[in-house]
Length: 105
Image (tube, rainbow, N blue to C red; front, side, top):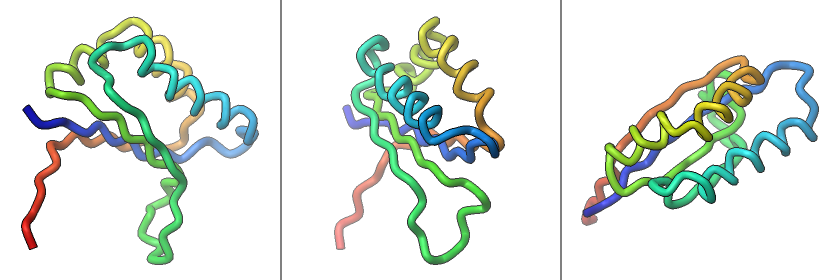
């Protein structure tokens, strides 16, 4: 069956406190407890030395079993409510969905 990754790159607005960011990340992580198609959530901050981040500072990864699962997630009322709050704190956002492909060396 495979899996589908939902990747969100974010840059929070200037003036957003670290506590606000932490609270938003906890809220994002909590979506996995409310939206069945969302199987897992991970996040991290940019640590690249290449300076190609284009201003994005945070990466959020959610895993789903199908593209249809992402569609269910996006339209779910809990996601809609959270996304309105979350996106209001962002200066930049980029979202990519993809099916990972393993390559044999």
